[in-house]
Length: 510
Figure (cartoon, rainbow, N blue to C red):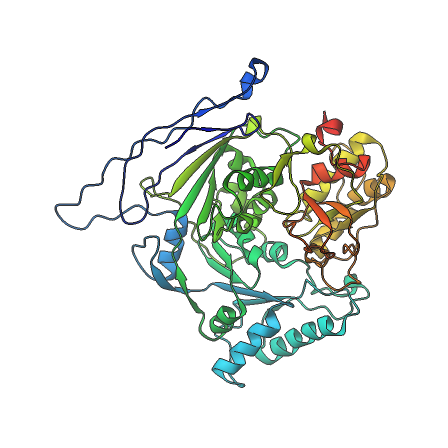
């Protein structure tokens, strides 16, 4: 293996356990030389070791059970198997199927075509239908999609249909929730050890609860609607060990952008990404959701975090359905294991036009921006807005560019107006945002995150530069194809709003 160089701004190391699926092979140790000055020696990576893999000898008597990862165990249980290995194809029993207004009509159409106009879904209590994408718009076709959802759910007597009828005042719709991925968690549909599938690529967010959760297409969803089953290939697992005390200027968004920057947008293609370590254990459920939300931006099949006391506490008042968490065996085989010392990380951004185009926030200080967007399933949760409010409060300044605030769910919107921000003397997020000159928090949805109709609030309709807490920055993602999107944490987004440039939040938090 040839030697390489890793820059001091990447304080991590990876233990490459390239065991493959069919055979084990040994690999030589290797090291990275860090080309840096003595003044920066404290951040130099001394070495990156690939431990020797000893050959596994076949058993001489009886059957030997091979250790399994969390993902393998969940799929084994769901397929009624005692043992699974990466690469196997198995029929999996689905615990929850979610769809929304973008893909629901198509999935329902396929279901009726293949199972019959009068067919009934396999289980009306295991299907969750959430209009959330193209809601607050005058676009007739978008509105028609919601009508199709309503007709189908009425016909099938779907128990969990979070309807919206009055788009002029979302608060007049007690059933309406908002962004599907956050609503799924808040309404108790995310449970350890289960299989949750959804017609949205960011369904992987629910892996934060120790469940197998991934996005599927309309055809697969139509099949699940009729049978409650799906044929899935068992993915190999990449393990990410995150240790060290989390600096008070970092958020989970920085961690996942760092990881994607290391492994690239194809580095986890059809692989599970398992997150463990002392840093992960210290994260709240919302931060864990942020971590898992973007595994698909690395090509991942699913992300997963082991359930613990934090998970159980979150679920206490959200579900009465019994669940059984699983954990990776000590002898489980991981395709690779990556280790990060989180205490050495700095705030990062993903520059246009890819989530792996990583840079330190401070390196982009000369990038002038036109707007800031704080919202979406990865950046519109209560804790995300609390973080942004913390920066505004610490600065005592007003924003210099339009700053759009889009809460993920109706519950988050209520939190913005009802929960005091710690250390603020009782001020709520909404009060702090108003004093800072931000736009008034708007109706919960994920419309602007992926563009949507032209009248969608905060959509990019001109070739502007935006710092956003969303999860994708491809051309046209938030609307205009020439728009430039810098993905960032709520800390970095708020700091950037205050200066009009991409800004390291440490300018205001230290």
